[in-house]
Structure formats: C-alpha cells, structure tokens
Image (cartoon, rainbow, N blue to C red; front, side):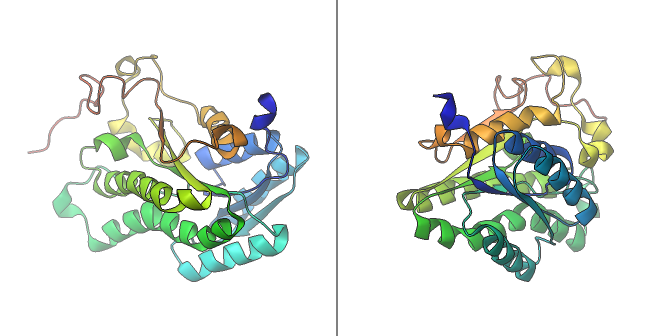
Length: 267
C-alpha cells in the first residue's frame, strides 16, 4: 500500500518553487523520489532548491520564467519536455501576497488589480493550458492547484488575492470535470495561514493562535506531504477535491466566530 505513495519515475513541475510552500513541496517530492522541473522568476533561488533535490538522488532542473507571460510559459514546458520527454504532474503554486492586501477598494489601481489577478490566477491557467494536451494525449496526468483560505472566506481589504484564490477553486473544479474523462485529474490544496517570506507584510491580518483550533499557525513543511500524496498514485480516484490545511480554521464554517482577525475598522 505504501508503495503507492512513491513518486519514483514521475516528472513533476512545481511553479513558484524558490521559496515558501513551493520550495517545501519540491523538497518533499524529491524525498519521495520524484524528478523535478522547478519554475520561478529568480534563478538563484530555484537552482538552490534543485541542488537540494539532486542531493536526494533525483533529477531536478530549474527554469527561470515569468509565468504571467504566455510565451515564457510555452517555452518552459517546451524545454521541460525536451529534458524529460513526459510530464506527470503540474503543481500550480506561483503567486504573490506582498503588496496585494489591506487596501480600501478606492485606493486600488488598475495595475494593482491586474498584477494580483495575473500572478495568482492567470499563471495557473496558462500553465494548465500549456500542459493539458500533453496529459490528455498520454491519458494520464495530475494538475494540483494551490489556493488559500482567503479564497473560501474572503478577507477584509484583500481584493485581488481573495478573488484570484477563489477563482483557483473553480478552475480546479472545471479542469476536473473537463479533463477527468481523459485520465487527467485536478485537485486543490487550500492552506490556512502559514507564515512565509511572502506573507511578511500581512502581520496586521494574521489570525491569533487562539483563534485556530490547534492553537498555532501552520509551518511551510506541513504542506509537503500533502503534495506528495496528491501527486502519487494513492490519490488516483480524487478529482475536483479541495483540501484545506488550516489547523481546523474552517471547521466552524467559512467564517467561524473569532477566527477572523480583529482589525480596527477604517471610517
């Protein structure tokens, strides 16, 4: 049974793999035997992750790409297929929190909105579009998206991130319904508040530990095993499923009493 969790021989693309959740998912996948194609803007960071993955005995390559640029996305998957011949799993993790929260709607510019939607939503669509036909032709593949608790419950003055992450849930379901008959499944990881480098500017909206049933915020490495499971054959019958990893934050409903951070209301 445990052999189904092995990723030996699987080639897995992880976007936003240089830091935070993407890095931890990539390292967990390497420990499970999966080969890696790592994509992000900063080559130095993803190459360092690739180096750690290679130390675990797997093949890992790093490609610098701006995933909001469709030409660069196409080139990413072209290069990945030249390097690996086939791809089994895509993990759409690329996103941005920094600079995307805590602004009243009247202060949000078109540029702010477009950056938030492009980075947190369009990148997942572009990457899924680029790899879907390859997976359909092989009659197998998995697309794993990464949303957020904000995508389920929304967030005060958090328009772009919440809207984009909510749309990721529907992208997951639409992929599942549309591609499932071709052997391609789609699932979605929904992290609760897990502090990373990218969330350092959100201190004023962080939930207090006492508002989370397990009494603490999450740690990035706790997402890794979930990614391994969803990328493995053990999850083959899961399609369109949403997996909150939030210490029970959603157990009381999408807006449980006391979970939402206490913030002084602006006039």
